[in-house]
Amino acid sequence: MIEAIPDLVHHYNHWVSIFLMVCGLYIVVARGNMVKKLVGLTVFQTAVFLLYISAGKILGGTPPIIAEGYEHYANPLPHVLILTAIVVGVATLAVGLGLVVRINEAFGTIEEEEIFERGEQE
Amino acid sequence: MRLDVILRVIAKLLLPFTVVFGFYVHFHAETSPGGGFQAGVVIGAGVILYAIIFGLDEAIKIVPVRVVELLVSVGTLIFLGVGIVGWLLGGNYLDYYALPIADPIISQEVGIHLVEIGVLMAVTGAVIAIFYAFAGRGRSR
Amino acid sequence: MVLLTLLAVVAIGIVRLRNLFAVVILGAVYSFLIATVFLVLDAPDVAMTEAAVGAGIATVMMLAVLHLTKTDESRPRQPQIFPLFVSAVTGAALIYGTLDLPPFGEADTPVHTHVGPYYLSQSIPDTGVPNVVASVLASYRGWDTLGEVVVIFTAAIGVLLLLRRAQRPTRQATRSRRDAP
Image (tube, rainbow over all chains, first blue to last red):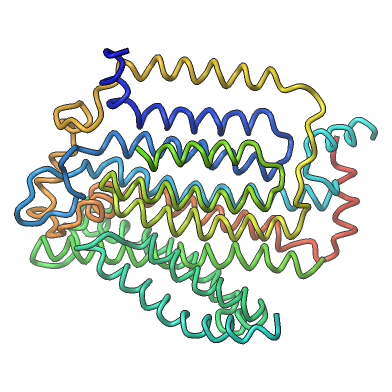
């Protein structure tokens, strides 16, 4: 137990990020409602963002804006990648929601199982 | 909705500040956090706020659909165009040093600003266009 | 750490709730929380984007869609052992993987010894821009940003194609029902 404490401190960010990722995965796999699935996808995405940003942090550092009197800056590369990923994520989310609206208009439901049933009847 | 005086007054008060803050975030991006993406989303959010409070028709009067679609495509074209200009002037694609400016550092800054303006226009347009699409769908049914 | 724990709690709430309105609002709370976490982790640009995009635009879009569809999730019909099993196995494998990761926040890990220091030291001489995120975004990695703008462009076109057409929804509905397998 004593040996596990440094592990807990060092990997707490990673573990929370993995927990969020598993939550997102569970929602996507288990739930049939499509809006809920998209929320789960967002949670999954955000978990990945958290993982990247944690990797870029240096303890005792500052944000990567060059100024006098600071030596350690956080790594800017993950920030840039995640910046683009967030905006791309919301763009894909918009397309997904558009598809959900069209599915709802065509089938009158956004539950996966009801759509499958209707498909089998025809 | 028609009786919400507080909402309407506050929305009217907030809108100019939102848009100005968006431009501040955009043009101050060199020395503080911010940039084209954030600014585009903030400005788009201002327009969306207006559309939610005053109705879609009022918002379309101010920011017509055609303007929004032009913003998306012109923003993307500016980004592509900056790259192609650098290419034609003898550099690599998106090489700002090839821009016809003597001081290389200033040419970099000009390139970054042009590209960020493209990003700003594309993101603002996309956000507003997507919102218009969803809101218009709700009205037609 | 407190923030991260709070984040995990909100995620559990998102998993368990069935009212989709509550889920969407919790999603906004979640976005603001994670934006705060990003701020603490020295990433103000990312925090700003996440607060504006995740909590603002995504929530508005979700609410618009809920207005068009229904707001309650139906109960699942079969027991959900299998998804739980899949998630648990994935989580266990990933946690096993983290044990080999370098500890959090140290300056000499592989992440910080590759191109990051180059950007940090060359940004002022090369471009004169003190905000390294902006210079990397627009200059060093212009290609990435270009691709990303094109993705936004495509997404906007996609949404417009999906939602702008079909002013007569009934006819459209019958047609798509006939096309469906």
